[in-house]
Image (cartoon, rainbow, N blue to C red; front, side, top):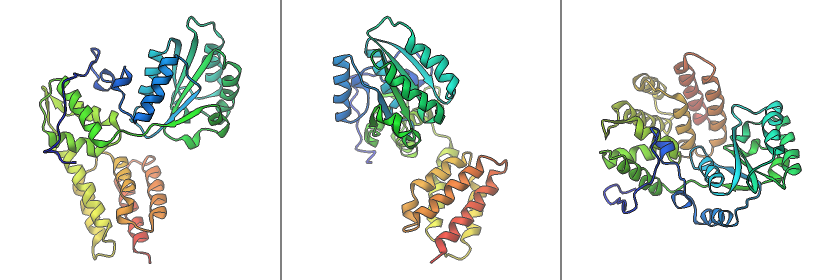
Length: 322
């Protein structure tokens, strides 16, 4: 992305309610504000014009607009709406006590829309009950499910929905939206800092905007040195993994980890996963399995640095193997 040549048109200012959290303040409330593919825009437009939707399943990576799209539909289609996050309520009793009660009650609008966010957190038994509810109350109630991991949704539940992958917007589109938000907030910023944040967290729009607000002080966006240093260390780590047979490479990695003082090891594991093709050609599968195991172990221990260094030793062993 060429920062010097990057320009943003600001003729149409971002419209937003008064809200202290930027992610919520600039959540799209009109179809025109939703950043997505042209095909998805046309599909949503048809639902809004007909004021009718089927049962829907939206899936994609975190922060790409699934929940925003579901809320936009509930807001623009005349309906009685209910939102439940399956991270908090995902069991059989939750389905029976809240979702079934909602389906059974008389509504004031032509239809009711049940929005179940993070539906991949539902237990298998809860998903079975959902199957029955979607069929029994299909005349009056529509369901919108969102998830990050569609493989965790049962085939039976998927078959009752029209499934749509919400593809992330392009990096330039994300950059343009972030700049609009910053200008709407009257924030002074350097485009290089914005580009760094977008590249670090793409395609997670939510994380990108949250990070911009996090590093804004007195109306100025200013990155802390540790944040840019973290990215530099991640890139250096990848470079070292590209030379696994180099003498003393494990010692260099240990020193790098000690110097970096990573604040979020999960992001480092993710970074290594996303760039696995660069440093582990033809060994991606085994490396990913090791990263998954080490990431899981990291969540269970107190001294995560030890677990991480041990993980790097495992990766070097795999990379050195002929």
